[in-house]
Image (tube, rainbow, N blue to C red; front, side, top):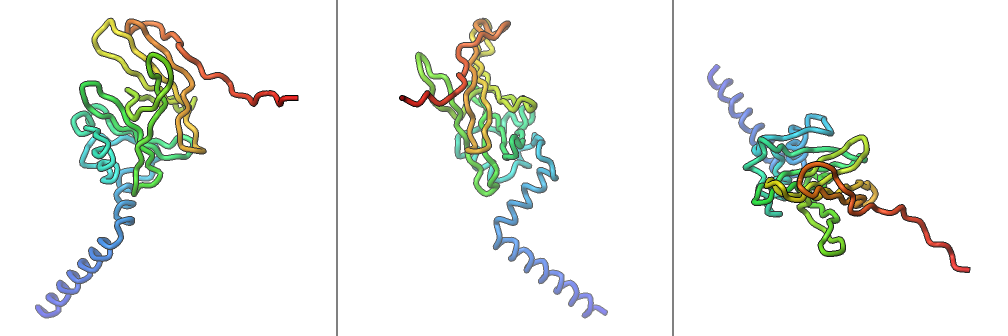
Length: 200
């Protein structure tokens, strides 16, 4: 009886070791399982525990210089799927905190996205830290606000429309709130593009 039990125990251990070896040889499956455990089949969800954040996204955030662990409970990482494309919005703590957006359509290699941003005194540049980001799902626009908690001080809001075709954000409006409260005043609105008339 003891020999049968000991054989079963040894056989079980060998099966476990073999499974671990196979699992260890396929990091893609391990990562997909990790993401699946977090998403639980959902396309929109939040993660408020740093230990539950998928390892590839955690690494990408750390490599970008994002300190996400301090505020993740109050500002959870948000996962969403605008236009069928998977994105993650991560809040990064700092003197001036800001969200960052990662393209997570490839779970093995999350990619930090840069957004167009008003550059003073004139022009438009890009930034990976555009401010506090919200998503207006019905309108399919993202808004990023920057400013100070010290009032009165101006706040600026950039509005973006997301394009699934080239995984990019098009800047459509820039607004300012002069004292940090009250009415938003439009500084710039994107024109409707049209091809110029063909020369005769």
